[in-house]
Image 1 (cartoon, rainbow, N blue to C red):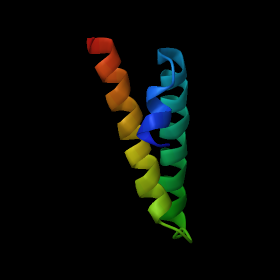
Image 2 (image 1 turned 120 degrees about the vertical axis):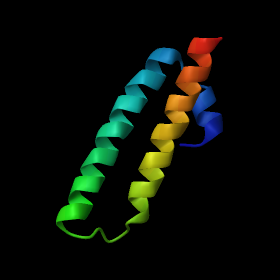
Image 3 (image 1 turned 45 degrees about the vertical axis):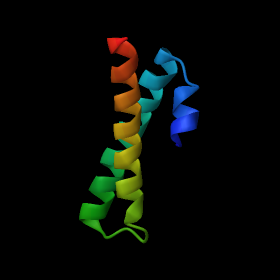
Length: 63
């Protein structure tokens, strides 16, 4: 997800997407430990998306 897309989400949608991407990241990491992924950059992309979502959620809660 791009930052522009993230900023358009509501707080509830941010929480839902954050949970979804955290699960996806954990699944990708586990799959990569068992057998190497064809595209290991998926793990990095998922991790960065989780960070973007968490950052936006924190910024909104602090305002």
